[in-house]
Amino acid sequence: MFALPKLDYEYDSLVPHFSKEILEVHHGKHHQIYVDKLNTVMESLPAFQNKTIEELIGNLNEVPEEFRTAVKNFGGGHYNHSLFWNFLSPDGGGEPSGELIKAIVEKYGSFQQFKDEFTTRALSIFGSGWLWLMPNLSIVVSANQDSPINGGLPAPILGVDVWEHAYYIDHKYNRAEYINAWWQLVDWAGVEKRYKFYL
Ligand SMILES: [Fe+2]
Image (cartoon, rainbow, N blue to C red; front, side, top):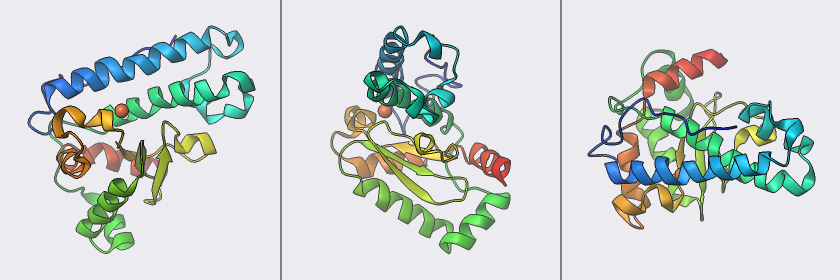
């Protein structure tokens, strides 16, 4: 059975950038619902019950067709959100350092140019989805609860949830305001650790 991951911080630790209320709803309700629905689907898939979430959504073609979409959506919802919480820290924000900043400047010209491009891409996603930074520092979009690992790509090293449920309580329709708040929480030390893991 899959379980809602415990956060490394409290629901009110990300204030003022993310409110306690949005964490309660986004982690406590939306993410929990993905976990519950995934567990319900898994009851019909006894042969897959020992697999990790990565094995499950990274090999969707092995899942019987009638359950594949449900596993992709609920499994992806669980996987993507688990990454998302881990990308945030009450001590986050600012700029990366070390090898990561060097590589970002090499690829994008400056940290600001990278940030502008990532923000523009996040704002241009139509409907619900995710924007990811991959280990090779390319920027990848996923629709709905799809994930780069569905297609055999490695796990992203950073990403932002652009579903309205991620920001409607704090910012109503204003995704730009939310993305700006999200930048203040990015745990760059963790991003750098994952970047170096793939080098
Ligand atoms: Fe979400």
